[in-house]
Image (tube, rainbow, N blue to C red; front, side, top):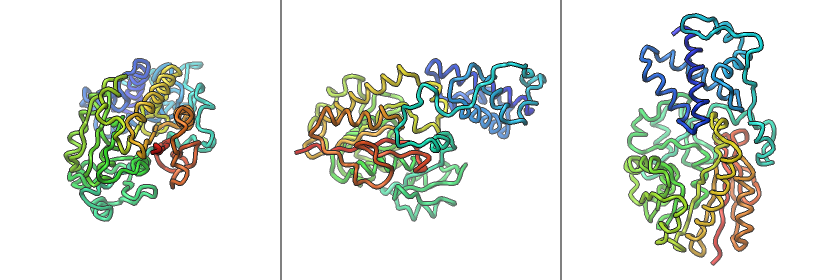
Length: 394
């Protein structure tokens, strides 16, 4: 592919990402993979170059652009090397015209300004769109961090998580024996920290209420030394179906995946009502803390969707509280940096249930934010998280 053809491919792909954002379609990674699956003529260098252009254009533009061409025209305004590639060649884009729309550069969509946690300073926002590092969690059921360090060249210990390693950029961890044997699992250091905050120990009955594909479930099981019981629940059948192979590779046998019907979670969990030692809610959220990994989610979010998510989070908190035994713990987390999903949600929950005992003030890591703690890419080098933990009085 010529440089101009690569640029045209990036324009076409950003068009697909824009359409998917409007219609709740596939993620950018999925669209890129599909695009090149039907274009076998594109070599590995072509694919890397096009992917780089696509993500540069997405990261640069907080507001959903009019088109892929407008997004790449905006990028060309910043990068003089790109403008000449709008050359009208057979496989390249048509020349840019005077006055043609070009997407403006921005980090935060205008409608979200002022809605982030007040702890986040202006200088932290650029870090929300930097490339995310590759972290892995060492599975203590299979070995220790020293063993994993020896098996993964260039790995370095993480500071927040005592079982975390940060790998060099581009490291193909899934091609290693350490991954295949279950010694390590890909997981951001912030997620590892969250699982540690939960405080799971051997013999507990634990409910992971929004388990997804099981990343935090696996971390909880390792902390429990694979002794006790974990109900790993989700309303998404596809995500839950990806859990069993991960459990097998990790050597985890105490987890029971359970598909829940949205709005009927309480009925499906009647057997553990008032019996759980720990309930973790890693709730569905805006994902503003994971823009480094999924920058196009800025184009998908709107006020109506955010309102629905906030209402769902509040309902799940109340459902979870019914499951916790006296003396047990409830942990709420969102990979969001918005006040209404983090400290605001936790404060409202505490006001509805005034007898709960907040327990995050003495926790190391992050910054105190209302009744919880906040991690951010700019301050902590992790994905963005808000976490709160309460003890149910006896």
